[in-house]
Image (cartoon, rainbow, N blue to C red):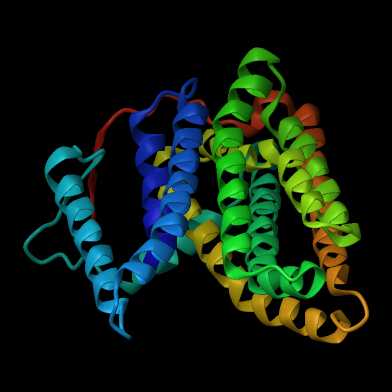
Length: 323
């Protein structure tokens, strides 16, 4: 499962231990801390590389990574209280094929108020975002080196700027649009992806490196879409099925890089000699699709009003017995 399983479990835990009113903020904090970790990692890796005089600095880097993961595991085990208590009998096996079958049936079962359709649309929207981000990451350094002769230090500086704006935008966007302005979550998501379209177009038409910084600043609040989408999912799915739905979405998100990386690489190979920034038009087209998906979900929510939401919005700790 790797990092996708970790994210999925984090979303489930936050949904379990927070009330519906505060869930968006908690998920936004999780998104912000993720970007903060990317900033520190991007800044620290070159320093570790330069600090080692030997030809092989990688043992130190991987040792530090292993140590930090061990600290996280110890903290999780001893400091975080379980939100779901699972009771296993003596003859009960935790890993059973029936669990997989039940998870699939739970994700595809019919729900009131077009909730199932909305869940699939939101899952597609989140997968498109991962698809675009992973695809651009695969070719961005190559395109910037081709367009503006950027070196690794220039790209690392830009990458830190992108992560800073995205991390701040995730938290500030939830507060500004959902709390202060009181806009519906999916309407906010549709609005947030419009600057993402503009970002890709600016990158495609850029004539200097400054334009890339401007594009990143324009899309500052786009990262707030993730906590807002997952908050909507937690409101439409009962607690007993929430982990199964998040698992399916994490699975779809994990598949996106497998398709995005070779596809973006192919597009870049076909266009970089003539127009190195053409690959970002590809991103803009996918972001337009994401805008349309968010609008469709918002319209469906307006049609059915509150029928798509579960009555059990306040989720307390509970005991679940595994058959």
